[in-house]
Length: 149
Image (cartoon, rainbow, N blue to C red; front, side, top):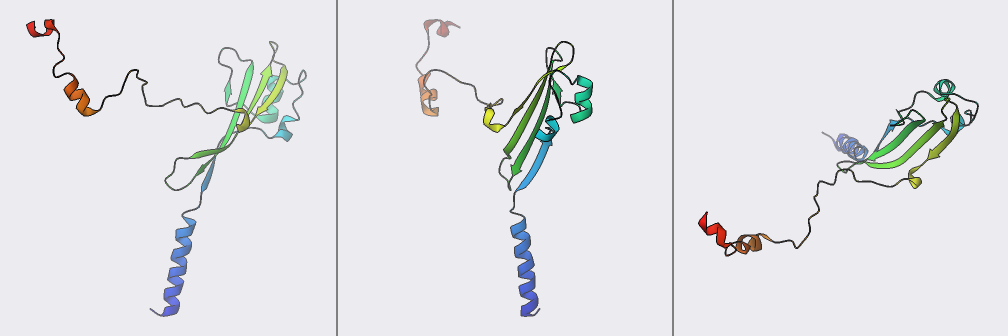
């Protein structure tokens, strides 16, 4: 292999290595854009017209069907690190009892709060003992009833 071919192979390998280190962005869900939302008029549009203009909601109100929620988010994933949410938009369309639009609200990440739903820890109270304290702590700790059993 000549020097020129060797430099070419190294250049291609370097480009592939660098391109593998770039972040990957992934979109999840759907939130209508502000220009799409401007076509929805409170007091005039109904559930049917909202469905035609911006589509079906991702989820609806839990107790009653008086709110439609559209949630869209973008995650950045880099190599082996955990994905990071870089953008999230929540659009809420509120309806009255007759199914007419009452209000349209839009929220971004600046309005949100991170909630850790799965912490995988159980809070305990009192002092924490190391292994030696746990082993020696019960060595001479017995009650009078425990000898008779």
